[in-house]
Image (tube, rainbow, N blue to C red):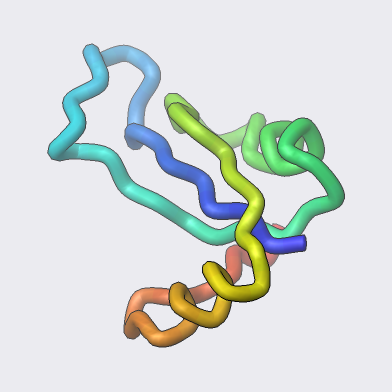
Length: 69
């Protein structure tokens, strides 16, 4: 399953909505995705599974790329 992860690039600063980034990660659960990203200094805001329809929509964007973890 593919998850979309919303995050800030650092844990040491106050989160600012305009600085939120997103990546796509394959995993078996939200917990699995968080574990895979644990070694990065990300302040993870939200992890959401993508439905088939949502995944097809996201694939249409030029910045769509699944992280290889």
